[in-house]
Image (spheres, rainbow, N blue to C red):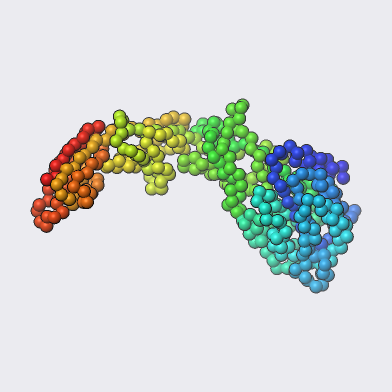
Length: 450
């Protein structure tokens, strides 16, 4: 009892220190089947459960931001009836229901069978619908499913839907091999003795109530935790829901800042670098400061145009080297951070430019392209045709002439070009015209089509 009181004192102290702690709702799901009359050491399983759960409920009345409820199964029908719907919410959630819970626990008389899957399914409706609340189930049982239900499937569905966090299961005097059955349902703890039961109940409630801390070390190419100022999303691995979002920050000592997180989840972490980096299957140890290391070495890429650009909104498509997936469309005369590596740039000039670059740790890679020139196409009618860049003996298409305009102005990169065209109203193919011209950086070229 002294150990339990000491643990509760720690709970209250920790709870008070978390100034922005979320509300936590804990549903105790208690086994009221006949097998709970089996003996542990000095008392029956049900006697130990009633005593220790009563002590816990009585102590939790002093903890802020916590609401309790009690659901019992197997306590109304005899085991001979094999009643697979014998489960009921005996005490619903409310701020001051502690005395009611103590009365129900004291008067409990085990009778029937073990129906875990159906009880978990019904427990989903016990939690009031409210955003920003941590919903926790603590199952106290001494047996396995006896009603052909699938507790794993039910628990996984409830977690995926965001109804509850991963349940805690305390196996009271059960077989240690029960962990193989309950591992997919939640976090299983085996309590073979009354002393183990008391300690485990305190640990489980502590984990249910309190958040814990961690720091994320974003490592550079040399393994130093120097990368920062990027968003990180912590996803629940089960439901894929985002649980936390943090902009990574260095504290006043120059090390990654401490984060307060919920240890009830197994996390998949996405660091929103370009491209993003991931660390999956992250488990936090409650009550400790956890350090999470993620490789995220970064450098910078600056895109610039020589001189005064004639492009109003020049951009470049950036892809990882050798792939076709677009990572980002980067503006020119702007700087962007990238994960260290090789990238392919498709610069949306006329004609398009293709450049391969390497981004290095903590360095700024600068890509300069020459200032474009202007082409003034002047005609006295409308034309079919296109502009081609001359590359040796080959012609590479650049763009079509606007066949609805007599005159137009195009911005082109420096180089040698050919325009091939024919007047729209002409019906003779041999009247196709070819003209070669050259674009100078920063210059203007006038070309008569008539």
